[in-house]
Length: 221
Image (cartoon, rainbow, N blue to C red; front, side):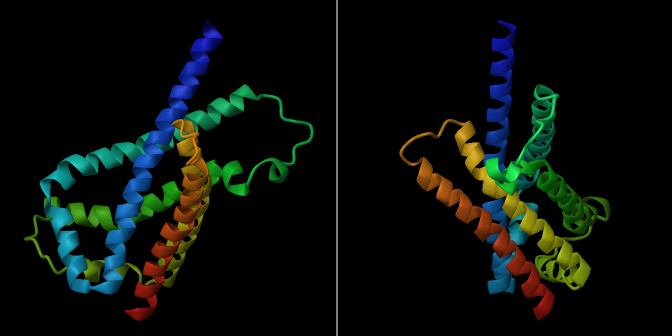
């Protein structure tokens, strides 16, 4: 009974981890879509950013949900990693990781930690200044400021390079994480191969677009 309960708890943790991952994948798609607008039209980007920055539903409902989803996903990642390590206390005498799993699947915790560090930088660059602007300084709304603030962050080549490295690691994380999330929620059907391919494309295209955005604003402004 104890083993059965432990197994069920482990499965529930993996499903919860997968669902939080799918939620964050959806957010990434929306986020890269908004940011890519900055390449196409400064005015449209400002309008869209201003709408999201002052929309009560987004600010007071979706933003806290997103913050919870990020924290939950990383905490569950650490919990499951510790759980898997505890289940195999004795290391294999001979283990060829590359022959059994991809680099991305063997190093999810590493890519996850890099992404977590990147989120800290991202909050420092955008979220904290936004909170200061609106709630601490109480500055009057300016619907034309967002494009300039975005471009300013990519003037520094070191910061731009850090962003690009983080996006590459994000791609590796998604390469395994997307397919793993679908598998954990039970999507084993005739569409599983197609969904896996969609996941691989997502892991390449979305981080690639983020890199293009960063490099575009670094070299063109």
